[in-house]
Image 1 (cartoon, rainbow, N blue to C red):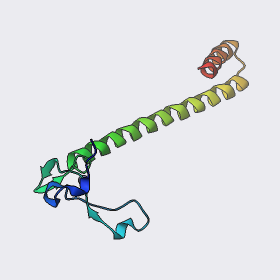
Image 2 (image 1 turned 30 degrees about the vertical axis):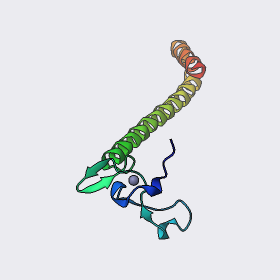
Image 3 (image 1 turned 90 degrees about the vertical axis):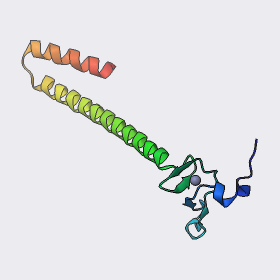
Length: 111
Ligand SMILES: [Zn+2]
C-alpha cells in the first residue's frame, strides 16, 4: 500500500527539518514527510526521528564499535604473542622450553 507522504497535513507530520541528500540539500530543508508517531517535549516525531530511536541507534553503534575494537585488540595481542614465541624459540637452548613453544606456535598458526 503506497502512501503519498506529501499529502499528509503538516500537523500530522514529524516536525524535524530534513535536508534532501543532494549537494545543495542543506539549502533546501523541509519538514519531514513522515507521519508523526510520538510526541516528545511538545514536538512531534516520526519513528526514525524520535529521540528514543536515535538514542537506541547511537547505543547500538557504540556497542558495535566497542565489540570491534575489542576484537582488533585480541587479534593484535595474538600476533604479538606469536612473534614473541618465535623469538623465544630462536633464543632458547632448553629442549623442554623449545617443545612447549613449538607446540604453542603450531597451534596458534593452525587456528
Ligand atoms: Zn521524521
